[in-house]
Image 1 (cartoon, chains in turn cyan, blue):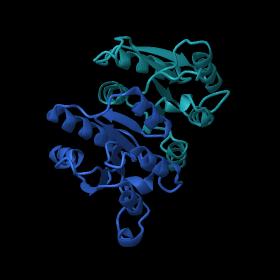
Image 2 (cartoon, one colour):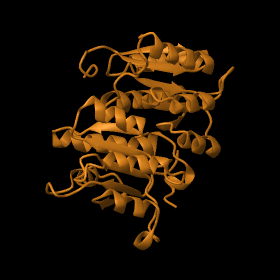
Image 3 (tube, chains in turn yellow, orange):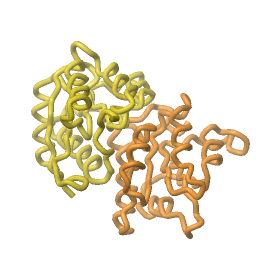
Image 4 (cartoon, rainbow over the protein chains, first blue to last red):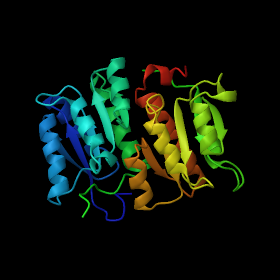
Length: 152
Length: 149
């Protein structure tokens, strides 16, 4: 399965400020089973700008968001709240992908309707495996929602 | 890594004969207790530990079949995700329907994910197993949910 009907790549938005993690994630996703295209936002404000643009000018909104919590300019927790509070954007699955394993962060993320919460392993190989598990589940098992767009 | 929860709640009806999701979970050999209820009202009573469910352990994951006879699966989903005590429990929505509308509405109501039930039984078992393992092994859950308190 490439993607739903059209055979186009699955669009993934990675919100991550650490260049090393960006590189690793990109590499891991390239090894995935499903054709995907990765866009990277280095901070929360950029992520929201990308998402709002996707809604307003017809460029595509992502099908899946990987969201770090500790970001400059606008914290990932705020980004999550904005996304899940928006009538159109909320449907996009958000995988929180963060170094934090604090119970407070886990609880708050789920209460803000994060679809799931994954702790980034420190070990390189484990990190790649985790990203591949995310790719495997979200891109091959799950039916992703239709692309978000502003209601006419 | 958090320990996998002990209970999975499956909300599906059996009027079609058998309980596909519950059976698939059991056949997948994931180590959990599978509790099945046939309608939304029962599900909410169990989740809220009301009446005869007051001693029940909270499930760590919910599998919700949209194809409930009263067609009210989305209402049940909405109610779980509106309740501050329940909304953190992952809810996996399953449906035979592949329509965009059902998927969109489920996600908008904060379903953790939506799975179109594969026709092939083997694939169905694998899908259900993948969902269980994703939230209970790959992902982290809030402590009270993962411990089945």
